[in-house]
Structure formats: structure tokens, C-alpha cells
Image 1: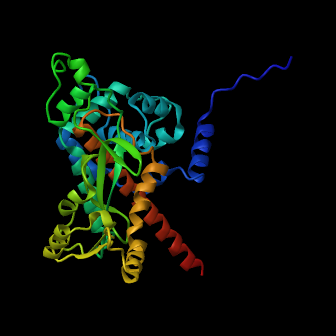
Image 2: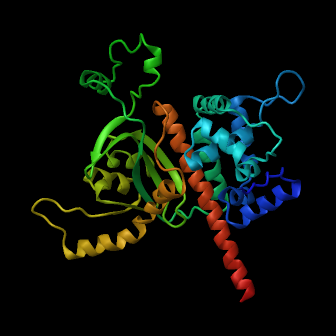
Length: 354
């Protein structure tokens, strides 16, 4: 019977060579580390969590920037707290992104949960998003020539409630007996809502975004319950100086047209047909031209659903899910910025060799 050779412990150069191989294969986390100045987020983390202890005394805390990057890893791959803890211990690419070695201690799932909760309570995720948007604007990557507005569903675990309980929740009340059972209440999302669109049923929230039409970077966002119609948020997202706003026909209304005109924003919202009043050939052609710009927002949501861990969250309550959605939007901008930088570098190299 053939005996298998026992694997030997990896040497230093073995690990280094494997890390180099991962980089050559296009590790997305490595590419982020190459272009992102993570220190710009440090002041916001310090403000949310307090000044990091630098002297002796007590158990040393994990570096907050590293903890923040753990949340990015977690959200990029849609992992639970326990899964990301295991993944960091298991994957060299995660360790390199976080600046850890095989000998370093990895935060456990509870530590990761506590860190995220502190940021949620401090409202830090929106501030982190704004800080990076400021960085993008300073680099001239937000063109301010036109915006695209749209929304996507973010599903959360479905609630199995009685009809009477759902009626109470819709009315903004807590069903009888839930307050007396805190463990049960902590597992019930009383903020999420059901809705149906194109024969698909969703329970959760909506991520409403405004993206720059040229760079496809997200400029602003707002989270609502899934039942809120897309058109109810566009007035909050748009502002004077947006130039032109592209959106599908769901956003078409006299009220929205007046609001955009008052902000001196040109409406490029699709025309819609009505019963007994179909679109003219001219309107159809106009919609077709607008679609060439409006479709760019689908690239944003496509990256979230295909390249990231999808748009399904495990958190309970609007505050936690809003924070998670804000982090998703920030990670998209980080990845999009890296892609823009990489493409610019490739163009420069082609010009140089030409």
C-alpha cells in the first residue's frame, strides 16, 4: 500500500512565494492595498472609539485600522463574524491585506461584532463614506456632468410572524409579549418591510444611490424599507449642481420634474407610457439615448451582487443594516477607484510603449 509523505511546515520563503503568486493572479485585496491610503480613515475611527491606548497597562487592543479592514474583508465576501475569523486564520491573502503574519493573534467573532457595533452606534459608516468621497473629489474623479439615480433591494432574514403581529409592526407598534421576551425581540426585525416587484417578493431594505454618470462612483445614498417607492427618495439625493439626472420611468412625475427644475437640474428621466397614451416614436428614441447613460448604474449594482458577497445581510434592525449598506457602498467606491487607477496606468504604459 502506497504511503503518503507527511507535509512539512512551510518555510519563510515558501509563504513569501505563495503571497507573490496570489498577487500575480489578481488578488483584489492586494490591489486595494496598493492604491488606498487607509490612514485617512483613522481620525474618524478615533473619534468614534476614543484615542487608542499607547502605554502599558491592560490587555492591548487590536489596531483599529486593521479592525476596519477586517470589516471590509467580511463585507467584500459576505461572511459572518465567525466565517471571517476562520478566513483570516486560513487565507494568506486576508493576512497580507491586514498586515498579519501566521504567528499573529486574530480577533475572534465576538471582538469583530463589538467593534462593528461601536461604529454603528457612533454613526461612523456614513462619515467614512463621506471622507473617501472627499478624497475622490480632490483627485478630480467626480465629474459633476451628470448623475444616475436608482435603487436595489437588500434582503434580510425573513420573519415568521402571525398576521396580527405583522399588523402591529406595520402600525409602528411592538406586538404584545415581545417586550417581555428580550431574546425574542432581539431576533425580530421590526423595521424591515415586505414588497413585491416583477413577481419577486423581497423582505428588507432598499439601497438608493446617486452615482456619477462618467466615473460610476457613488456620490450619495439613502436607505429605506423595501416597501418605499424609488421615486420617494430622488428629491433627497439630488441637488443644485448635479447637471443632468438620469433615471428610469419609475421616477417620472410632475412633482419630481418641478423639483429638478427648481434645482436647475436637467431631467433625463425616461418618458413613460400611460393607458390609452403609448409612447411616440420620438419618445422611444429619446429613452433609448438616455438608456446609454442610465444603464451605467447597473454596473454598480452588478459589482455588488457578482463581485462582492451579494446583497443579502444577516443583521437585525434598520441601524445595523443601514451601516452595512453604507459599508457596501464605500467598498464599491474603493474597488471602483482602484479599477480607475489601474486602467489609467495601463493607458499610460501603452502610450509609453507606443
